[in-house]
Image (cartoon, rainbow, N blue to C red):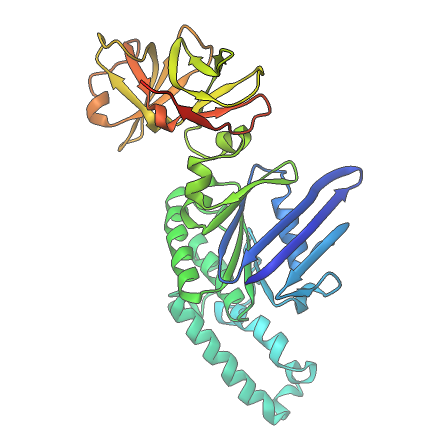
Length: 380
């Protein structure tokens, strides 16, 4: 069952197309991430889903109902913004109460002068307080209810913003880069908290980010967007291991995938960086074939080995648990990045000439149209 569907969504800003026929189906209870570089249209798509922006063409469907003409406040979706958008003059408890009061109390009951005269107001406020206490316990912000936003850290403000969305019990949570204002260590911590919160609530999450680490670690599925299009939608593992296009392969993964030009003969046998590859591709004659290999899919060999190729170490990047070696070869102008353990890299210095080889089973080959090409292993 799909709780949210976007069908043929198009949007232009003036003459500039921002979204180009987007089709997306989000399952009930799924954590789906829209990931892509800045300006690719992901935030615009989220705002169209929320009802904050109107599409030029296409339909937004929530729980099997077209909601194109339904206002944002009536779509039962909760939006968490990048800037949190907390009321600075209200306490945490009052911030959490705002959406509930707007929904539960009539305009007369909200009036500070005549509101207390209505007998139903007290009962409604008691239910609102119960929800606030329950939500604050889940998010572990009960001790912050009396504080104002200026007295909170970035992580605490982010939890309050989540809490204000949670108390509404929406059909789905829409999050527009909610962690981007936090420092690196807190972002890692909040990724874990968001994932745990999703499992606990079992509610649909639609999350927008340009940070691939957030998309890879939290998502059930991720949709990679570029230039107003969804290039690939799949699980994080599938997108990382089997990107369908060169653009997706280069965007997902840190450090970036290594890309080098490859050549092949009329039988489809490939050669890259002077090394023959023991499989062939079933594709017609074409130019600009490229080989892709992730930094972790290399091996460092003894100098006198008869396989692989020689490369000079240009830079040694120490990341603590991993060392990234930047290599230069005689066949290719760009650097190759190889990940290795600190133990293996201990005796390697900048300027050394090292023999390395790729793991052939991990190679990705992209044709002249930048799409992934299938291959078969040659018989020994």
